[in-house]
Length: 466
Image (tube, rainbow, N blue to C red; front, top):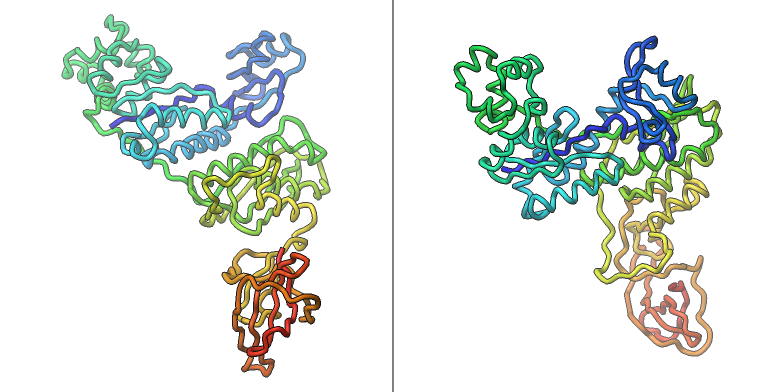
């Protein structure tokens, strides 16, 4: 087995920074209101002289203005789960550890390549989401977790190689209980290898069973004891804003983050979303912006365009302090089939994105979809609706069907296809009995025409092809 560990030492800070385009100096604080302490600072705040562990009151004497965000455990858990969801794309065995995600990749090699290739792809996706990380691999999840804290990029494919690297780990980085680490240091132990070579009976007598269990989990002699991660059935994202926002145009950046996270989650589940709700939270109350799509989608740009278009029409009753996104129903997604060498013109917008953009700007009812009915008569064979559940007509039909047939005048057309006999309508007295052809007129237009059976040449024009 080979476990890859993504260690996320800046999870709380990165989770806040990815929600702001340019926050300037920013710090995370924790503790009671009268004694808050800086627990994380970004690069701008560090350059200005702010340090982790500093009292907030002392920091305010160093720098007059900086963004101050309280640590929110729910946000940390949400971002932790997001990284686990990204890892779930590469393995069904994903577990959460403190500030880390571990996944077993040996069974995924046939799909994604060898372990280093999987690690490289996973790192690229996590970096794109805005999270810094360290990575390591080992035959057990706890060994990979420990090595990631010692050296970024540590890699041990075999138990012997892993044990060799673990033996060199200083006790200060061995993730031991604080009391055990103190006791072992007083005994003159400096590395994990020195501890491992001590008699087990003596260790258990003096330090208890916990230390031996830790060593056994590192070596694989004891079960890892981890719960496997399973992606949830709904998406619930939220971004706290650093300032009150009075215009929806200023919400574009956090909205793009939320829809990007939604798209990443849908790609992992191999699913789509047809309806979701953007919630604009005020100090009192909230404004809900429902977003509906004609068909399930999961492309980030399509979801972002649809949500932004709906929000552009919203009149805010009060400033916004937070923005959320909820999707309760995640239906299956069927990607659009394309040819291998299908080249899209430069600057062209995918059809799904254009369709949803038009609906967002013109209204829910402005763009409809033609659907085939069960009635074969051309005048009644189609209706229109907003959903995408209609049956697709397989036979060639004109883009523009005339309200009523009219004689085709001019020189005789060239027949391209046909005849197609339509003979029906006996049940309601409006009998139709026609032979339809696709023809090219003397002016080069492709037309849908018919004539009565046995009377060729009496062309009646019924539609035009695009």
